[in-house]
Amino acid sequence: MPPQQEQQETPVKFVVVPFEPGTPPTRLKRLAPHEVHQRWQTADRSAHFPHIVAVEDDDGTDWTAAALVTARPQTAYLKIVDAVGDIPAAARAVLAHARGQGLAQVKWEGWTASPQATAAAGFTPLRPALTPAGHAEGPDTGYVRWLHDATVSEPPYYGQTTHFTCGAVTALIAQTQAGVLAPRELDRQAELALWRDATNFPACEPVRLGVAVRRAWPSSPVTIHLDTDRPVLLDHYPDHEQEWRALLQRTSRTDAGHLGVPIDPHRLPLTEIRNALGRGEHVLLLLSLAGMQGFDVPHWVLCHGAVPGALVIDDPWANAATGDTWVDAHLLPVPDPSLDAMSTLSADPFRGAVTIGRPQ
Image (spheres, helix red, strand yellow):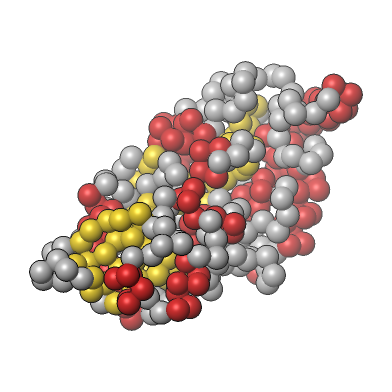
């Protein structure tokens, strides 16, 4: 995606107030249509810090525009759910609000936003999600504006269709962006087929995922990064359930050796992730969702870009219950310290990742 140059925008006077679904300000009621009010209250957005960015009139007694703004915790973006009233002024206010926080990006969901209004505000359309019908969460369209001059290439977005295929989906997205897989081949059949080879029941641990990627695409260099030699992602199972899964993980290490897939036993630093991205590689990174979603579940994301102060990921899962959609999960900038903490897992900390190089 090409960088978006800063524009000389008319300054706007705005205020920021918390969004309380049950008691919206009277000034907001006058601006927002009924269907917009309804959408704002269909999810419990409280975990994503919902707030209203409102533009005041000249004497400060009323609002001329407003936007509902949210964001995943520990990230470097803001998302406009809807803008109402004087929409260009609302967009300028949100952009100024984001710059004031030193954020990397503003997104805009396409519920009511028109292509003309978003383009006028400097936003670029996101590629439509490839998620199969019936599994997608959120609007059909979305828009993004970066607040710096870095170039971030946009992969296709595909949302996992099960609770356990995140590892397979991140690999498929990476290979589609790399040109190894055609976008039309990024579908549920491919998702489940790769998961079946990558799983050690039901999770995809790093070694098995790396082995499955090499088997699926022999021309793509693969390196597994795992700074422990013990079985992982098994702590929540009773001992008798851990035993056979641990055996499968040891078998996966044997398979990696037979295929010539290296296992780097050192913790992968974020500086090396940036270096890998600079070489045109992709990094599948295992992290906990505790920071962004509030529950400590291991989950795979794709690292595919870097901007000042943050790495850009694609997350194949969105939490509709909190108003989280594919627009949040796609092209998601996460500050380096936050991503470092998220990707250090378990009480006996480890980091798992799979690097996929350019096809040879």
